[in-house]
Length: 249
Ligand code: PGA
Image (cartoon, rainbow, N blue to C red; front, side):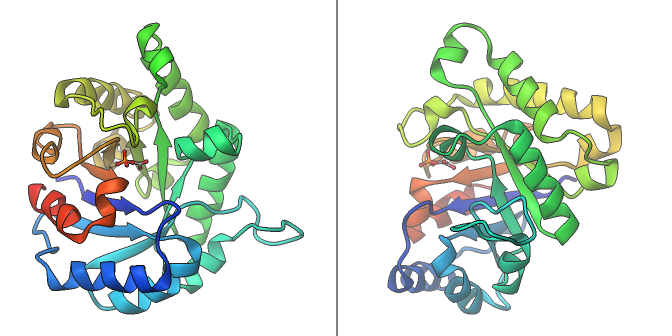
């Protein structure tokens, strides 16, 4: 059976006080799932606090991005090693907000993924089409190119340690979710592309869905055969909502 992962992407939210509240809310609630691993990705400044609050719990911690470099004169950047030293085990890479506002390309995301894997972090590589791309019938072309570009040169062993998140850009933060059938169709397409890279890795690699996942739509999405979890933005900032999504898994 493939791993199932419910991940919270806090984005630009989470002071230390808010992080403490949210982590305590998760620990005090029924946030443990038989089926799914649980992960939160706070901003960098809150990672250490989250890690220490969640130490020895069932909840893992991840970064929202990282540099492709090990170190050097790169003001404002953070390295894989730095994430590891504050207890992160995962890192989100190539989120559409990074692609849109920071001009991140598939090539850059690929370099980051290579670095993350070499350092021992599990990359969660995000792909997804814009509304215009979907409406012009180009979803598979766009997602296929993102998969090829971001996973380029990863060995079969690397792919087995990688997670992909399908996040249609038009569904992120908009309240518009892909229907379970729409999402499943793209997840199945991604799985087929992975099979072409390596059969065994394709079977193992979890593909998460992201984009306005809420307590009321999570069960439908997560019941699809190729949807192996969720990358949750807005709803991961409320302990009760995030717990409800975990329980839907
Ligand atoms: P959302 O964000 O759940 O608020 O739509 C998802 C994401 O960007 O990962």
